[in-house]
Length: 165
Image (tube, rainbow, N blue to C red):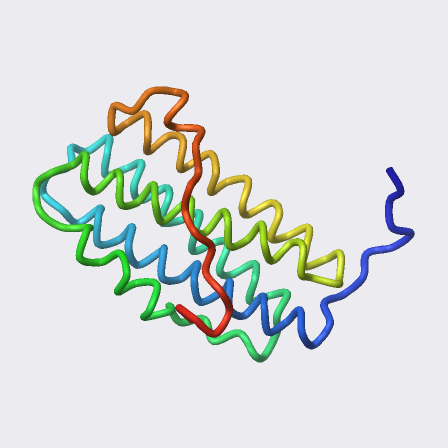
């Protein structure tokens, strides 16, 4: 394996892709805030949901720092609206499943971005974010009572920049 000689900054095209990821992360942040506000969850579950909210907020902020001025720092309403209807009510398993699908969608989206990014700085950041999302997905699957084998499967479709942004 050959390592790059130096960290390379994002190109203009990279910054646009990273800005897309920034808006998707803020949508996830807001979805976790909605889930944590549900009365169905006990204090421990709410603490976990708030922690996952904080991870997405931090990811969005980190992406904004790399993107610079073109980062909107606002959620993607398309991403938010695609999941919002499933994050309600008193069926905790359904909410955990919806959040797991969100995590898997974002993990696959970020994996596709890593392959598309030219600069190593942005690619390394996105790779670190998708690692957290994959772990969160597995934790949500276990909380929903899924088997370990099921928890490790990710069949979600990735989002495309410009669609869902």
